[in-house]
Length: 283
Image (cartoon, rainbow, N blue to C red; front, side, top):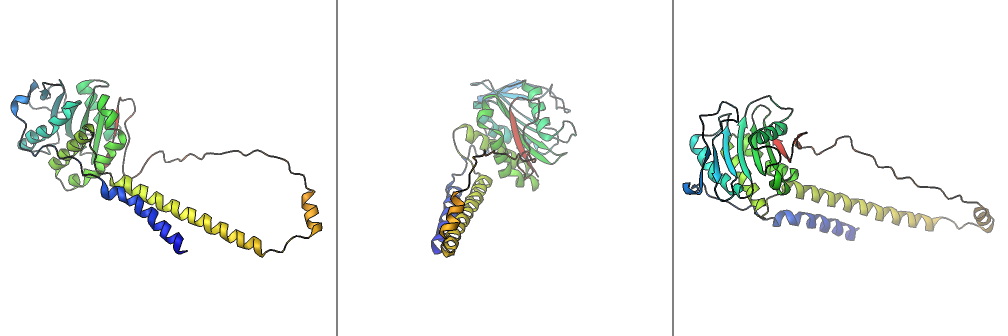
């Protein structure tokens, strides 16, 4: 039993080691600002009333991708909007970057609305990502498309929003948005971000498997001891057993599909009818 207990502890410890060793995401920018010469206004217009036809955008001259802040829910100050653009600039190396906040019941879900806003701005399949704060549904959503979606997958979108939703719960929407774009840029640059939920799930799975194998071991040992304690069959009984005819049968494997269809913890997948995909978290 001591050996079994040591085995369980060793497996559980090995599962938690990646979490402790996980590198922090790369800090990109300090909020001091990107030199103005590095991006120019691509589209100018008056303050938006919620439409996407007059959104002020800023272009990365080296890549042609653009970025914009659509703060329709008025969560950020003017200064915060400018500083956020500085942080978003790193993502325009790979695609368009959009921050959007809204308080609207439109769309079937927050993810569907985020995807619709992105596609209204850039069209179907254009590389980039939108970080959307849905104040009506109290959700954070990331939707990515094109080349960016190959890296910022739905799983990573959920991981990022897992990492930052507490900031939104506390009303610090600026820091929440900064971290969202920093972590997306980190992944696109080949870096790593924290994945505490993933490692916790792996640890629980490893522990469950350890207990299961321990159960099999003890059950097998108990069965062996029970068989040894049974009296041996006499010659007449053996003859009766050997005279039985055994007809081979077929084994049929049945796979039981879960009716839940997805992960819990307040997450959502990509909306239907859209290119790309994403995920989010309630706050």
